[in-house]
Image (cartoon, rainbow, N blue to C red):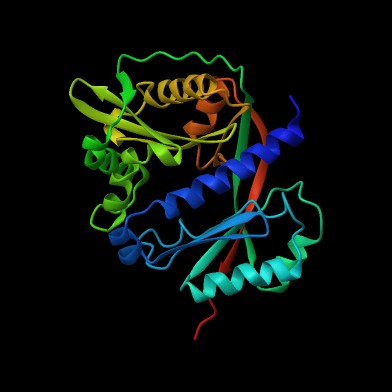
Length: 277
C-alpha cells in the first residue's frame, strides 16, 4: 500500500466529509447551531458558534496537503473562525505535512491536545464480520431514529439542535452520504455513515446505544460500509478514531484493525481558544 497516497486520501476524505456535513445542513440547523464553513488553502474549516458539545464541530482539516501551511494560511483560518463566532477551533494537521507549522500554531497560542489515529485500506479490501443484529440502510423516513442513536451513542445532547441536523443526513444521498443501521428486531440500536466523494470513501461516524454494545454492531456496520465503498469503485477506504490509553481504551480502534484497515499514524489535535474579551 502506498502510505503517502493513503494519508492524502484519508485527510482529504475527512475534510470533505466535514465540509459537506455543514454545506448540506438545513436553514433551521444552520441558524440554531451557528454553522459556517469555508475552503481555505486546500483544506476545510468548519465553525459551529453554538456548539452544544463545547467544541467538537469547529475544526480545520486537510491543511498542508494541497498547499503549504504558512503564517498567512493560519491567520486566514483564525480570521474566518473569529468572524464566524467560534469559541474554539481544533487544527487537525497530519504529522507528515512539511514546514514549521507547529511553531506557527504555538506562536499564536494554539496548544497541543489529544491524538487521533488515521486508518486506510485499498479499494479491494475484503472485510468479514458477524452479528445477530440486522444490518441495513437507513432511509429518510427514519431520520429521527438515526439522530437519536447517534446523539445518544456519542453522548451529545438530545435537547439541542443536533438531532434536527443529524435527522436530515439520511436524505443526503446526492451529496455522497449513505446512512446505515443495526436493528434488534424493530429497534434501531446502532447507526453509521458512509461518505463517498470521487474515489475516496470515508467511514464517517458510528455509534451504538450503550445497552447494546459488545454485540458486534460496529464491526458489522464497518464491514458493510467497506463492501459498499468497494462496490462504488473507490480506490481508498478511510477513517479515524481517538487514540487509546490504558485509562481510556477505545474499542473502535480495535474494530478498525479487525476489518483489515491499516493504521497509518497518530495525528495530534491543536486547539485555539478565543482570547477572553
